[in-house]
Length: 91
Figure 1 (cartoon, helix red, strand yellow):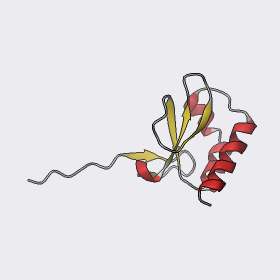
Figure 2 (tube, rainbow, N blue to C red):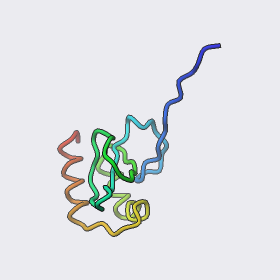
Figure 3 (tube, rainbow, N blue to C red):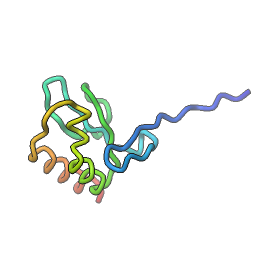
Figure 4 (cartoon, rainbow, N blue to C red):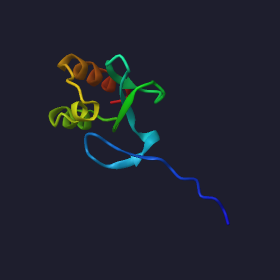
């Protein structure tokens, strides 16, 4: 019997859809408490996932989903920086 490789799925914090982990961008809170985009998916810290489009970031921002995931307040400047990085990265 052939072994079927399992594809890890993660839920987008914006739209709430389950998608393959490789299609999503990881947002990480480092042990020092800094929140940023982790484009490689390897940074140390607690992670949450996001579709690579600006609308999902705006939905997550409005609903304060990252604040809930990371259990900390996130300043507006960090959201602005993440939005700029997303726009520069592909949109």
